[in-house]
Structure formats: structure tokens, C-alpha cells
Image (cartoon, rainbow, N blue to C red; front, side, top):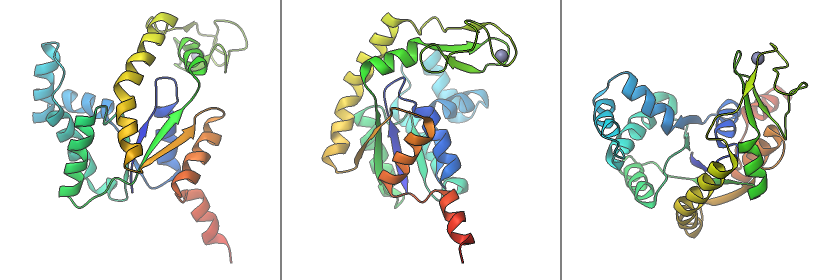
Length: 227
Ligand SMILES: [Zn+2]
């Protein structure tokens, strides 16, 4: 089973992908991580990508898709993949569909994690991280006991400069403009599952697992221990 996870900044996409990887047999493939790995290891694709990045240009789709496919056809991905951060455009979506088809694989579902705009803004703007131990907090949803101080190590909490309200609004607008056509594309193919991204991380995961009819590894283990 191959699944694409999409969602605006603040929807908890990265967190969900990581939890889903733990709970199911699907492998989390994050395009951003792949990118960094290829550039760091100076692979042929990484070197090509770097030449565009260093000129301040967008990396062309065929390089991005090359990295994704290189990862997807490795043995640990044989049970399926959760795509995170890819595709971002309809061109990338078409290229992915074509490549999967060539390799006799299918795209089975697209999960759109949604949340109200004001919640997304609070999740982004409220984000704080401990300078010392990197523990994440949120001013609105998960505040530290003492303002500005880490509960675990008393370190100072900081907010990333681009997590301000104006930038957050802009990021959401850009995301929606770029991604809504993609979401509509998948809706028209009957692949779209819209999942409410509000609430506790594990509640949201449970909704995704249920929507996709995925057996979580835990449930399967439980079944196996039943007489
Ligand atoms: Zn800390």
C-alpha cells in the first residue's frame, strides 16, 4: 500500500507520518530528509540537486522524483510507503503516477490532514523549542510550566524567527494556492481521505488508520495472541 500524506503547515503531518510508520508496516519517506541525505553523501543525484540549489534555483522534478524512486524501490519499502512532502505539484503527481505504474505499483490513498486556519496559525506561532535539549512546546497547546523555561532541563525556550504571525499566514496562503489543485485532483480520482487533524496525536493516528482500513501492528499482534 502506498499512501501520500498532505496537509498544511501546522497540521502535524511530519508527526503523523512518524507515528504511522511505527504503528503500521509502511515506511515513512520524507522528501526533505532524502534531499539532505543525497546532498550530504554527494550521490550523483545529490550533486545535481546541489548545483541548482547553489544557483538559487528550484531543483527540477526529475531529480526529486529520481531520489524518491530510488528510495521507494529499496527492500525495506516493499510493504508500502507513506510519502511526506511529495508530490507538491500536479506535475510531480503525474510523474509519480507514471513511475509507479512502470514498476507495477499503485497509489492507494491520499490522506489530507485538515484543521481550521486559526488552529494552524496557533500551532505555528505558538511553537517553542528548548535551546538546550530541543524539547518542543507550544504556547497555546502544550505550554511549559514556567514561561520561557524548559520543564526538563530549565533551558531557555526559543521561537524560530519565521514562526511569526505574518509569515505563518503567508505560508498557509502559499500552501493552499499550490496544493488545493493537487488535492482536488486526487479527490476526482477517488483517492482522497480527509482526516480531522484536531486533537491528540494518537487520536488523529487512529482516525487515519481507520479511514485507510490499515491494520496497525499493535492490533495485529493482539489478534495473534488471541486463542
Ligand atoms: Zn530542555
